[in-house]
Image 1 (tube, rainbow, N blue to C red):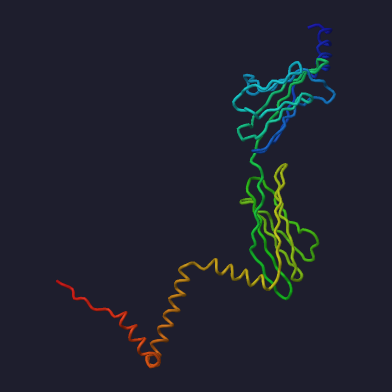
Image 2 (spheres, one colour; image 1 turned 90 degrees about the horizontal axis):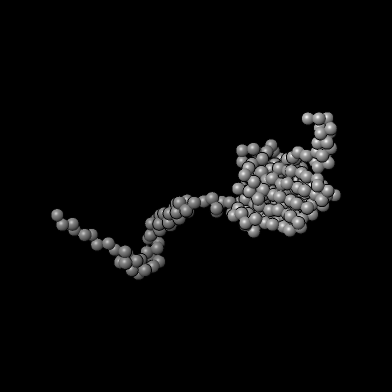
Length: 282
């Protein structure tokens, strides 16, 4: 190869932006994602070609100002091509849409560019769940323990009070096994306080609030609710049976007084519940 040809090729490559570029994008299941073409904003695109797989399966293109969306079963009704930027939008993405997308660009000045877009689709982050594990009031000082849990992997949790807060709080170390974080707070007086639990993962953030109010009436109500919900039906049966035994024992002990007070009623009662012995035949 002569020196003149080598120099000419270098000039052409510089002008036409030879080579390829890799772009990494994260999408979330059920949402829309935009695959960036990597085109310069100053370019006037004359041709855009999006494809997948190594055998160059075309899915969308721009040629002579005409947009073509190919009838490929995987993306039926889900593709939209931007004619000015060359970006491709995929709506309602799924985990199966995670793959490498290839785009070839041609500008009006014959500048060319090829880009590989690596798309990774993840499940969307759900709102965290908060449950109250402790609420006590002692000498106008309220003590609260809240636990926040979130589903998914690599989820970061944090606690913050909402608005003005006149007490003190501390959150424990996040539990990486089940993505949970406990908050311990001390509140001055019988007031209402709101706490925020924020879950974050990559580009997503979800927050849930819980408002706690320290008052003696509320504490009594919660103790009753917890007790009633924890007592099983077996315990209720035992309590009822014990009550019946106590009533019968009292009646047996005072039977003379009861008979003297209402002999006729007891006579009818005894007649109703009289059991006649049966003789078994051998």
